[in-house]
Amino acid sequence: MKPLLIKGARPYGEEPRDLLLRDGLIAEGAVDDAEVIEADGLIALPGFVDLHTHLREPGREDTETIATGSAAAALGGYTAVFAMANTDPVADNAVIVQHVARRGREVGLVDVHPVGAVTVGLKGERLAELGTMAATGVLMFSDDGHCVADPLLMRRALEYSTALDVVIAQHAEEPRLTEGAQAHEGEHAARLGLAGWPAAAEESIIARDCLLARQTGARLHVCHVSTAGAAELIRWAKSQGITVSAEVTPHHLLLDDERLATYDPVNKVNPPLRTAADAKVLREALAEGVLDCVATDHAPHAQQDKDCEWSAARPGMLGLQTALSVVVATMVEPGLLDWRGVARVMSERPAAIAGLTDQGRPLEAGEPATLTLVDPAATWTVRGALLASIAANTPYEGMTLPGRVVTTVLNGRVTAHEGKVLQ
Ligand SMILES: NC(=O)N[C@@H](CC(=O)O)C(=O)O
View 1 (cartoon, protein in one colour):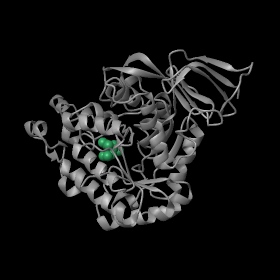
View 2 (cartoon, rainbow, N blue to C red):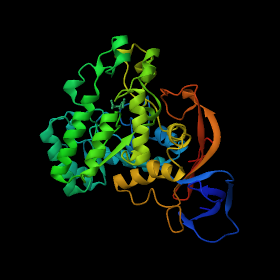
View 3 (cartoon, rainbow, N blue to C red):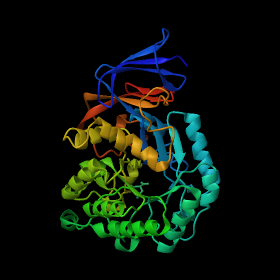
């Protein structure tokens, strides 16, 4: 691999500096034979880490594969993704998680970390073999798409996780409170006659799980926090020294339940789009560090599962290629985060939460050459059909968003450059 010289990029948006990438690392000094990327005006950040991606393989390769999802990730500036376990078959055993990891390595565009299921078949009845999966390198377990609703099962999972030194990521949704739920329980759902998904369904599980994390000393991670009350609970738990971390999705930062008026199922997602007041609190909580990181919850769905009546549509939205731009629009442009802050919420914190040691590293000599170049001045118009995912269910269709990922580098190798994936 030839050395690569990135000329004039601004690490973390600060003073321009040349970055020499050699043998997979950021190096000191200069070389004559380096390939050059002119990066005047571009911002260099550590490669993004997504703790919450649905890659759909095995089982729904008609909507996404590990190859197409990895391409979308690289184009979105990501260098590592955590692939959720709600595949078919479910990733609840060593064979499936090893298969996902191996396919990720074969594709080679992004580090693919399989998430193991907490319970067998995501059924919430008995624990999956967490230890066997952890022995293959699984760092995070989640029944995402489903809540581990049984408090005793959740307690046991947290207890095992401490011995295995892994994270349990909870999809916080008390199922009895969301039976038949279609949208955030509030004014807009009421007007459309859609059954409500109350904030308390999310918040009651978060409160319970924080108490269980305190009891067990485990590392609890809360997926896709979507309400103001949930952010308050996380704030309280952290103030008590409970080891809890939390993510927020780009769509919950930008969009709200006024979108329901369109009656377009592209806006159907789990947890649902909440109120504008919730979104504002989430942005502030992310800026403050109460919420640790941004995670996409990239959830590709087939056209027939989205272009149908609301109640029949599957919940979920694409997110990998639009995440950075939505973070720029919601956090950077309003002055809530600077580029150091973007590095924190998109890369450093998610890497630390999962326990990755080769991602989210400082842009300094001797560190892995794993980084993303962003053009802060560019804008682009989102077209679902042009995204790398097989599915096209983006809620940002036709929107012009600020900030564009120009180049992604994983261990010294360019994986995406100017909108093209480089294998
Ligand atoms: N987040 C979503 O809206 N969808 C997720 C699973 C889920 O959480 O329902 C999916 O896998 O499609």
